[in-house]
Image (cartoon, rainbow over all chains, first blue to last red; front, side, top):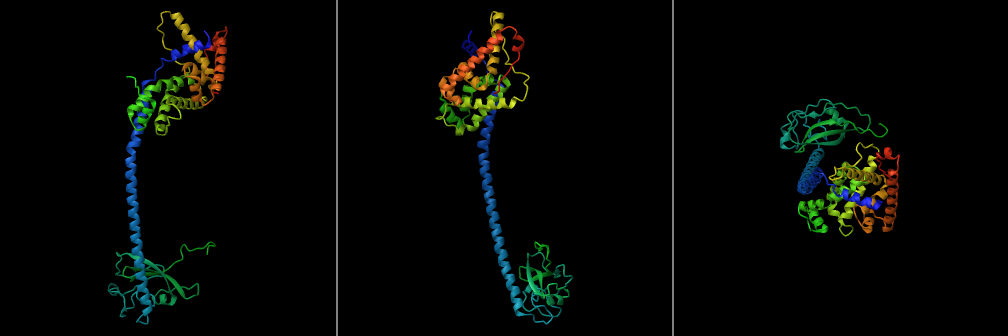
Length: 200
Length: 199
């Protein structure tokens, strides 16, 4: 028997080979899995995209509203403080910049603070490091922090002596301002995180 | 199951559209061809089962991208089976197989001696085919055993028809030499060893 005849005999023998049933089952299961993946996941993915889109749009709208509110509140607060500073204090012992934000000493009438601020005339300055809180301030209302520069002497007149390492006579303070533009508390700004590349 | 007379292109189109019956018809039509090819190439029924499964899973994934005008479905499946088998053999050559011989079915012939002799010849032939370098082995399997034409074999292997002819001729020569060596006295102790060329 030559090679070609032998190979034909091998082909006839090989033709009886059959694929085991478990292979059939595995292949058809793979088909079913693939169909589930394509036809089942696509709508879910679309739903997820729609939900994500709505969430992003909502977040964008909320942040836009927050920015507008913050901007408007900041403008109003700056305007209030600026007006107060410009009108000067009626009492000689009250610092200029904080006259409207922090109430004057006892017996001194607040010149132009809003109605809610007039009900809180007392200031109790503690230390320079901590905020000086107005005792009956409405702390549940939203506050905004403003950083302003004021004369060191005015700050000292509140009862908080401050060293003046720069020698310029001015000191940075942070003021918590309410929605009504009235300062709720004040403290000296500390230079935390303002260290430059040289470590100064 | 009754024979499905729908064309391959029609079945592929329907299967790509998600029709399970169409894919089942494709699988029914070509599963044995793929399995036999992989079994002859690897010499292992277990490997052939894995290859068959992988080939059709590949078909499932590539059905939407399959272009019937570029290659017939059978040619495409042979090509995938060839690549998968070669990868599998390349990966497995680091291991020593515990079971390398194709299991032999009991013969129903009247003459047990003749049946035993026939079975032995087939086993020897399988070993000889398995020992061929893969470039010769695949040509011998496709042309001589699976009955493809020169042109079809050339399309599956992406080689010219002349290359198919030369490889076929060379493969047959190697098989003939091996069969002669196996029939020569003193070779019996070596013949039991099954070798598979992975080059």
